[in-house]
Amino acid sequence: MQKNGTVIVLLGPPGAGKGTQADRLSSALGIPTISTGEMLRQECRSGSPLGAQVEKLLNSGQLVKDELIQEVVAQRLAQPDCSEGCILDGFPRTAVQARFLDQLLNSLNFDGPAVIDLTIAPEELIARLSSRRQCPVCSRTFHCVEGMSTFCPHDGSDLIIRADDQPATIRRRLQIYSENTSEIVRFYQHRRYHRVNATHSVEDITQKVLRVLGTNLDRTKDSKPPVPASQRLWAQIS
Ligand code: AP5
Picture 1 (cartoon, protein in one colour):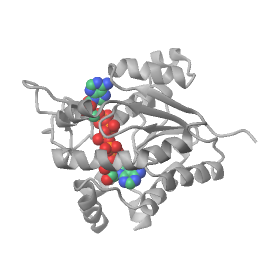
Picture 2: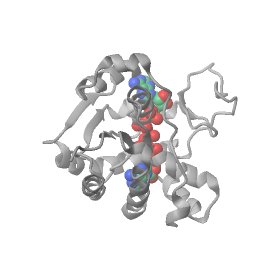
Picture 3: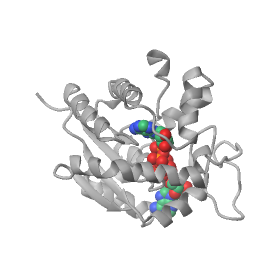
Picture 4: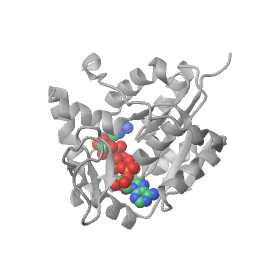
């Protein structure tokens, strides 16, 4: 039986540019992004009891439980707009999640994922995250330097600093990332696994990723708008 489209996993530490590249790849390839961090932040903003619990974990830099995030990803991946594939930004983050993803993709008639591991030095990450601002309405992120407007150019909202972009929380997130990453890399490294240097310009990195994925670059010329991310699936699982 013919397989469904390709699922792309973006790995990389906090601030490597997973979200930035996920949006660009979504536009270039016409497939949706599933950003687990963004879905969790949406739940926090909803003010639900589950959101309140999740918010404490996010603000302290901890991961949420595997079972919870796996359930969310399983429901989202089963939606019709993912049938041509999707980009997973922030999932899997543990070896347990990686094994779960393999089983899930198999059950949904996908091949194993194409994995892009964005690599970058920790000093650069801290600089990037300290300068990041996010629009609370459209969730777009911006790299802010002195003198730059603090309003979202798309909807005029006041840009905010993400609660987990405080220096102590950044350090905690980097530590958790390094504790989990070697096992995930071991899990994927003999499969469709590609390391991409994430210190280049945003555009260069996108082009490099599309090249290693073997995608015809001409598709980017007729790039489509990003496929809107979901998605409140929480009500169904909480
Ligand atoms: P999540 O939102 O996924 O956070 P993260 O992995 O820590 O990654 P970030 O969003 O901080 O960075 P990014 O790599 O997307 O970089 P970005 O493109 O923004 O998760 C948040 C939390 O949710 C987790 O800590 C955890 O608690 C929970 N969670 C999520 N998934 C989970 C899971 N599967 N299991 C359990 N818990 C989970 O770029 C960063 C900045 O750099 C931006 O300002 C950007 O403009 C700039 N930038 C990007 N690329 C470049 C470039 N090439 N050059 C210069 N600047 C650049």
